[in-house]
Image (tube, rainbow, N blue to C red; front, side):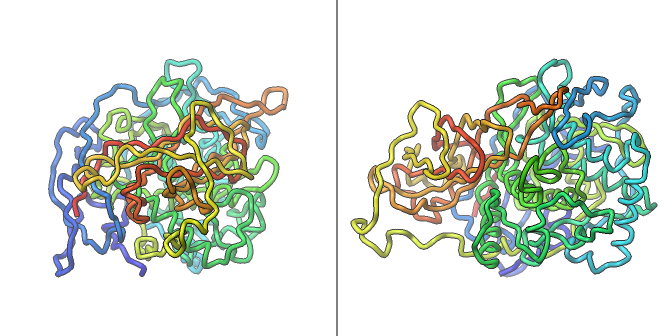
Length: 593
């Protein structure tokens, strides 16, 4: 069953309190929703908070939430938010696909101003598969991009200068303030979503300025519904300024269905099965992360940290898969397939527009409460050129002022959300219709203390003790059960992916089936080229992965298991991992059914 969210629910600047007209239907009570408010959107006024018990229609929540309950973890007070870089120091972040480094040619000493948020009509972002039939809109979109491409090469609005912003902040062009060797990286952490939201906002505002249209918006690639799951047709005309030849032509033509589990191997399943798998992946991402924002958004990153392990959330994983599917399959995998050049393809912004929409829906499902009551996230500060050619700074907290529903002045057109409905995502139970003696059982061991390399032909299967079984409702309100994989090392700068599955063992034995899909680790190609033209490995960090499994264990009737079999299936790349464990982590949201 597809469900519709009304505009107050899907808008990126939705009002904090989600009030619905009363009906006879059962409702979900979410107490203690907190919003930040201030006359100018700055967190200086954030001490003024309001709490009110909004009513969320149960039909608008994920069906089968199971054990997804939580309590507020409470605010943290730290003092190391990521701050804007020193623009006078841009390092050679040259990638193999670039002719020269992606540092900006404009004056790094220009004045930085506080951003004045737009006073425009509320702009509505629409699905790409719908706007293709709106000739007036498409003419405006193509003309705006054409004008952006025709600007002088050193203009901050120039199409390729705008694309280079992404390279600068993900290929180590800038270091953090007051450091010589700690680069700024806007992926793999909790700043992934807010940084990209601002990036989209300013890009969109510049396009509107170029055609003198305050209502102009970028369309979103609606890959979370069947009708929008193919590559958007609006980017396929070779004569259009929206076209990019550096794509996987097998995927962008002839209505091929996007595969969110793509790893450079073609999926032989039917279109209907790929669609079902995609919807299940999206549903699980939301369902398993509503009680702990870092599972959706990524782990904290703090200024000056050198040894932190990269840890993206599952929303970024889904985002990465779409990048891989669109980008070139071979060589340097430009444009969408490589961080350094991804934003050279106009579909990048359309794709990220849907990622931004996913975050908006996530926030609404949590009652619009602030994801991280942590100064190091709220005070993260970024620099962009705005639609008036001013270099401006903005904070993550400024976009979260949810008592002011018109902050960024955009929303999303309401569309069906089939992944919010009932989908058959669990596989047929392996042993319920057979005696265990009929199965081919394999002995599995604990992970041990030595890092292990993943092998595509021989998935790593380990038995992992659970911290506690048969937890009561109150215990689930307080802590979510999480698989944690540490010290993930991608041993080349190529793309890497492995998928994680969970099953109940038979003693210390595992059945032939890997069990239920729990989530994935995906890292895009991340390379640089040295001054001599040869490829450099670049600064590397280990990664980690956290996957919430509380609802999953309820879905597969595994709550009374003492141990679980966790299987890591390498899909592409060269990867080692340093450990697998299951732990209980404090939740950060309240949802009592």
